[in-house]
Length: 307
Image 1 (cartoon, rainbow, N blue to C red):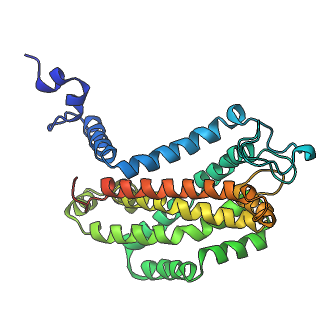
Image 2: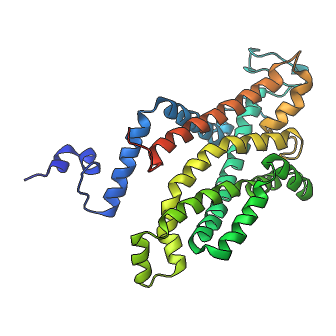
Image 3: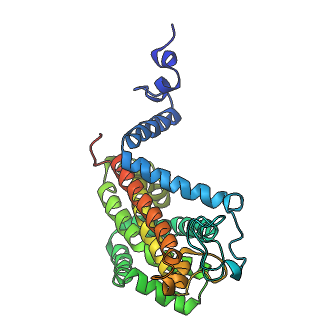
């Protein structure tokens, strides 16, 4: 006789209350999480904005109507709506829409590099600190406190001033200032599980400290860290734009949203579109990550009630 999950197809297989494998259980949890986030309209809006950023960055060579660095002084300061220039041109005659599209690549590049460096460093420090405790915890947390004592933008400016301007140094400065909150989150999660029965059972089986941390504690910390990463991306974008605005990030002629705002600030009252359009891009992308982060918090936080 055909089982009920088989009759219901793949959805029944995903929602089977008695999964037959670890893979089925994990896919089922992911499917239920997607159903929960799909019911959150604001989270779906944030996901759409982030997805649009990804597509824009990937397809920039195909969808940008003009070369973002080619200058044409005969077309400088054209207003939005000019034929061939939907968002107008800047003081060098460059198409603002094309520069925003190509600038999304720089933004995505910074987001990606910070997302794979700062959370990993913070997760390592937080889990080790919470697991071992004692003097290890005291040393690592005091180091974390030192980094958290300085405003992130000020510390990033100081690091870039020492390292020199450039996109790589900007990413490195942002990553070095962004890890302390992840360490705090990971430490708090580790303190709640390090004395659990299943951790004691694994320890009695002879598992090493590294195996316990990497295989059992880190997975428990991941949901909270992922939520924090998504919510922090708006701040990362603003810091990157701030560095670009001050000339310490991406260098000309490469298009970057903060640099575009800096170059257009002297035209704010007469040719308002030059600084306004990249500013709106920063606003929309930051809003998208914040909305998506709120939705992921409702889905991934084990302390939140199912909706």
